[in-house]
Length: 163
Image 1 (cartoon, one colour):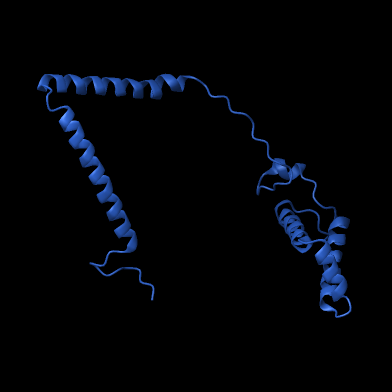
Image 2: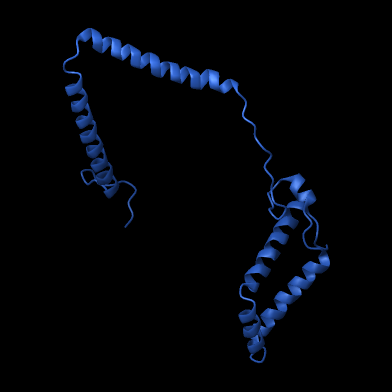
């Protein structure tokens, strides 16, 4: 049964994975820290402070440059062109330009879908239906997709269906 709260003391597999990743990262960091300590073992206290100041000044300068000086330059952005067959909800510009099915084309498509459905259901027309589907694979999906787009577009725009 699915439980919202797990029992205390039983780590999940995700916890085990994160624990292993954390232990691996800690081991790598300790190895790196040991190497840096060996390298800086012969340095004086003054040279370590100077090195730390140079490091901070350098990376502080790089950060300052990236944040303030680089942001002064403008970035040119090209216009994004949306293909006309894409229907974005509540986008008047695209919806006004779209020319979907006319009422006659919509009726013909619905009639063809009904014709295929009647062929599929009748024992005599089943052979013809199978031949059409074999010659044009995906035709049913395409018809349903186009009708779905058209009906969704009609709901958003409010035209195309006779009342």
